[in-house]
Image (tube, rainbow, N blue to C red; front, side, top):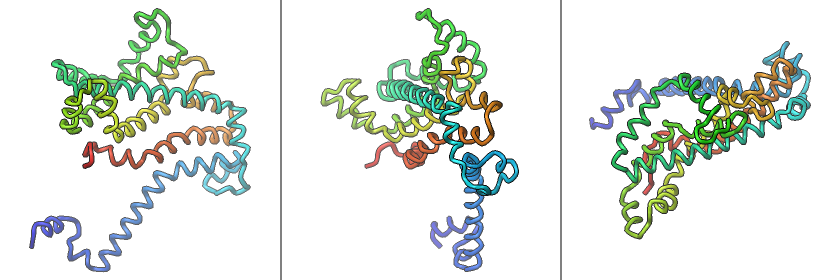
Length: 298
């Protein structure tokens, strides 16, 4: 018996057991029930929310699991979009998410490039300092960060009720920097040497060589940045006290008490659209690149 067969025999079922029809049927049944359970646990709440968004309040309260017992109420979406002003909060959330995505992408790629490709003498010390910040609880930083936003150095103007109060703290994300640096470490150095031989400077090397080779990690970073900004609640609540510029994550809990249940559920359903669409658009890149295996294909 060769090594491959020895390796296969170490599993729950051996090769001989898999050839028996009873074992195959039982294994297929287990796979089916596991898959069905994952679908129900993962998609069930989302599908129920989509159904409840189009169901009158009375039907949701009396028959929560029934599928449109008295028809579909499309006015819920219209009322949520206009009367509850979800359109305004939705726009605020998009602006916050796009700004957070842009600053995180710029800081993470440039910092990762400096630590991984340029490698100054103090790079190990800087890398250790960035790694050390991951062990600081985010709650501990709330007060000093808030005071910094209230009276930022050099500016002399408070950043409260300004989107930069949300964007700037998200830019200093140590996890993103180390993630990008890890990816850059796997890029082939021969390409960098060839570019330098052709006369490419640090900026040209970063813009024309490193970034085009880093599309997978940029996709992963984009998903992380947008979804984290989309669901962030505490920090926008602190630095954006003006309701007119608050995102959905802050406004939805506030309007819950004064909004009908069916309209509120419709607003919740609308708020989930962008994260779902974003994940579906980047799922292939995200799943292939999450493990950071293989920076460049041959």
